[in-house]
Image (cartoon, rainbow, N blue to C red; front, side, top):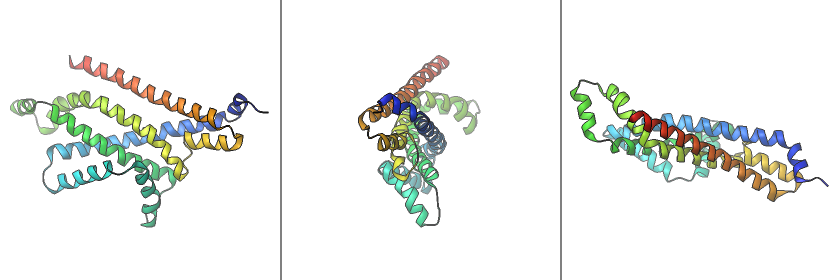
Length: 219
């Protein structure tokens, strides 16, 4: 009879492949979501009128929608409308949209926490909006936003497990395939949970290190 270690060794490439897919998907979704989220945060902070209203509706709608619904909508509804995405593309799109709404609110909150006098001082010395944002507001906003942004990245890693529903071969789906072949559920679910913990713990530690570096740079 095969033992847990024997099955684990046999399935090592499948599980490592699932882990690599989880990390790749999460990193890509966080990157794309952060880029969109910075734009969303700027619009929420500085734009007025219809553009602000539209972006506010986007953020509220996405934040109020379960991630699983976003994933299923990206995979099935967009396909029925003629925008056919494979499971990987649909998963990235759904997670990036979810991430962007949270990052947008994080950026908006960080910018609003910076004293208004600093913006006025930047204008007084002749800096343009782009210069004052890049050299005055962005470094401070990044330091304020970093802890919440790290939490969002951790949430994206957790949410990536939902992509198994549409057939993306990330870590959870790879683990379930191993369990289906071995009929050994509990040990492999514990293993998958432990691996997710290690990934999220590493993200948190890197975030803490970056936070310290930014704090030292501000002094």
